[in-house]
Image (tube, rainbow, N blue to C red; front, side, top):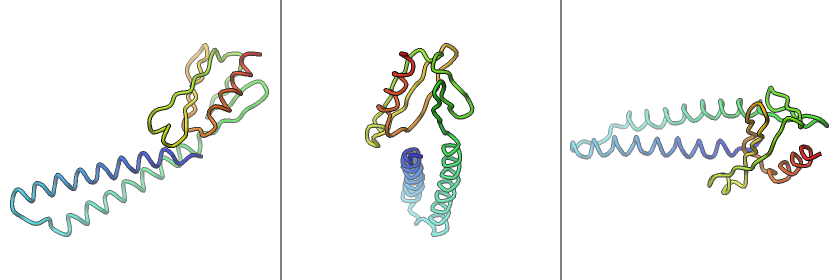
Length: 135
């Protein structure tokens, strides 16, 4: 499993925690008071608790996000997709994907769209899908 989702989410929560701290600090600065130590401790503890809860949720959700290849189908999460139903395959990458050297593979079938997220060997897996759907 790639730890790419954890990096982005951790950065997001730390940024949010700093924003909350700065807004409280500015409020106390304008009123001419010092920030109480208990408030600093409360902000730090709540940020750590939120990070731990989010990391646990992310690790549990992405550890169950497996994909297994079979000769005639692929199993994504809890769905099995026959290669014959896949119409085409795309790679989607955002800025953070490029920084982390990952990519998302989007499988379009006649029924719906499936996304395999945060894959390191995305080109190799896309080529595999292309070879299976073109046969």
